[in-house]
Image 1 (tube, rainbow, N blue to C red):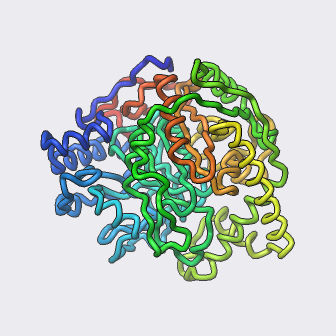
Image 2 (image 1 turned 60 degrees about the horizontal axis):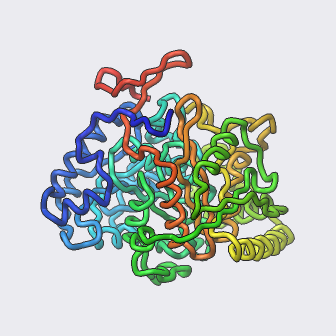
Image 3 (image 1 turned 90 degrees about the vertical axis):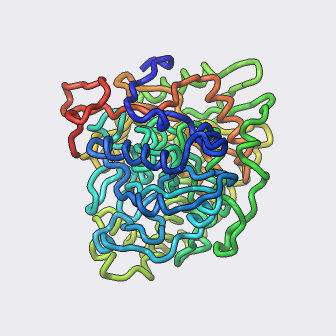
Length: 492
């Protein structure tokens, strides 16, 4: 799809606007929260049969909210991932044993967002317990990619990304351990930011000192992501890793002139993982396109030896730790890939963990050195385009077999293992019209600079950034590019 082409969108005009524009309308009293709630619910009802992104709505709760007009979000409806508790709203974690779970207390992050003017409109779909990069579960079924409903939207924040792309909401919260904000952002043509551990405090659970899983913002453009990040951050001792934000306003930092930029581009992170020819060409073209008098790009291949082992070790350890306090009535129903991940955690040795710790320290030191020269490290989000919804994970990428469903997510490992912020920025489309994102990894606690860089690149690429009508395709031959009508929508 050419960069200048604007896809069709037949939803409410309010849903087409950016989050910042809508907040401005709220603060000037040109629009009310009630109007936005109705617009959002209308769009969700229209698009859900095609993409199944917002799996639970809470209209009455949203209308009962009374956010202050002078608060940060001023009454803007937002989506919350179905791994995060919202008081009085069905929260299933995508697992059958919790299909009827209704928490009495909201997660501290949700309370913080609501105190800053967010209005929860509903819960977005996720794979079971957030494990997997294809969003499906036994409670709600599969979420579909709005750019081609035969394809998956990535995961585990797939419902959030798909709903944003279709204009169901203006902002959505997600979470990320192995790319769960970055992969769906790339696959759905939106922006997803994995913040530094501790920047967004939430309920710690049984493994509160684990720095791998974080919550973060998603939106259709970089500045809106910065706005939501401002609404999510803040020191909260509920989390042992919590720390204050590095700036009074990430949005303010994002909008500031960035000055000269130096970007290190690594096409495959030093041979860490394979990349298909089409993805490699799209990313290389984008890197050439953004170069300007104030943007220098140099190819750089970091040393990633031992990264795969370190990431897998810490992830498995975290899963085994959480398993110790998970009731058997819940874990007995886990999907096979999740159950296998947990079993792997139980086989770790002390030597495995010690080696992973040494590797992580070495990789972090290397990245610190890189950021002495460059502002960000750019690399793929994944090595391939979205797959059909029915495929849980690829069996091979560019001819290299995948050992399991983690192999194709390898480009997410570096930022997670080193505790670095990382963002997926839309940069182009495949020949079949599917979005492709570029991953930008920032310096330690360097969200402000990362957002500045991402916004400047977004400006240089000039992609539409507007929501779309889901493109409903029923088989490999058919292609429907017209705006979706009620008669076209088919439940997945």
